[in-house]
Image (cartoon, rainbow, N blue to C red; front, top):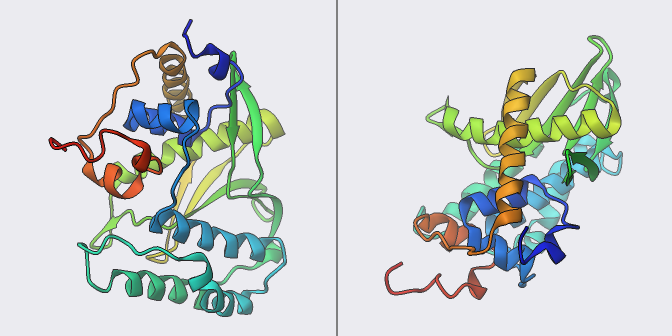
Length: 261
């Protein structure tokens, strides 16, 4: 029981909400309990724009040869913020160039696949917990009869062309949660997860592991239990990158600009 049951009893838990709590309890409180206004950042804008282009391609609203022109013509409309300037003076141009290169060289033969769903909200229950996921894309590969969950990722999980296994493990929690939701709500057994890394043009293919799916669902459910019992909502200001550049409610946070931050 919690004094916030009047909100949390009808709450639909997502990967984003539970990882917000995992990163900073107070950020969850501001975002989902207080419903403070959320501010966008460069990374969210860049990701949403890139997803939009691929969504339009798979919905047959853009042909493959239209992707790069659409990117060029609409970039400034959707990307209005700058990346952190301390990283590189030309960081904004670098992100622009990487995205343009990806869409100029994008190739995908739709005739080999059946498109099952694209950017669809999927609701399901985990024991007594209401959940929602939104996979980027689910494909059925005709030749192999495999169901493939595809995620479009604008973050870079590589260091000098070597996959960062710690980052990838964090991403796989999200994708396995999505795969579980697709299985429960749509009765579609995902066989493989493909991650398309847009800014580096690489793809990682991972076979489904039933034991790992169970591990992920236990992790997810345990976090929802903590949230439903939470009363203190303590802030965590030890992750300055998150607080400065990723937190969407930092302007409402009294701890963000504290002297000891």
